[in-house]
Length: 118
Image 1 (tube, rainbow, N blue to C red):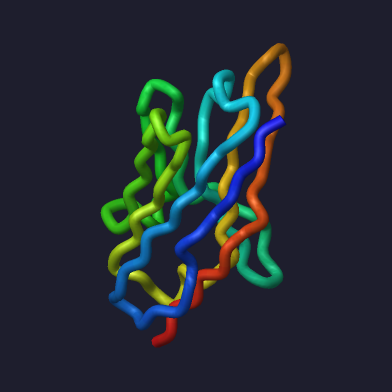
Image 2 (tube, rainbow, N blue to C red):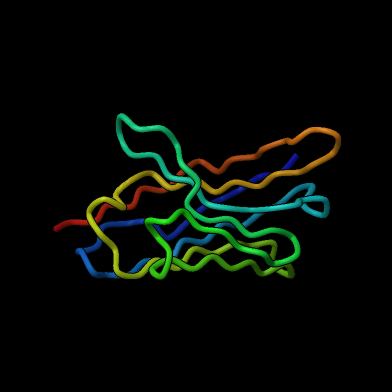
């Protein structure tokens, strides 16, 4: 099992910045990838950014050039640096980690609220 604990959410004005952190514990040695998802009220959870064990990253188009995902393997922690925040970035952000062992197993954090005021 993998436990994920997020921190860093909050309220910020449009144009501001926040950094989310997610610390993994437990059976972390076999984690393949980690990432951040978000879910706004009435919408489906969407992938925001992800980083593989090899360091490859991907982003949803709406955050490219504004958000940066990074991973500190020594600390088993993944970060999401968010700049140029917009009201439409308002959502609950969830940390995700997954393992591939025949099939994919996903692990989730409890979520952290990010609210961007206009």
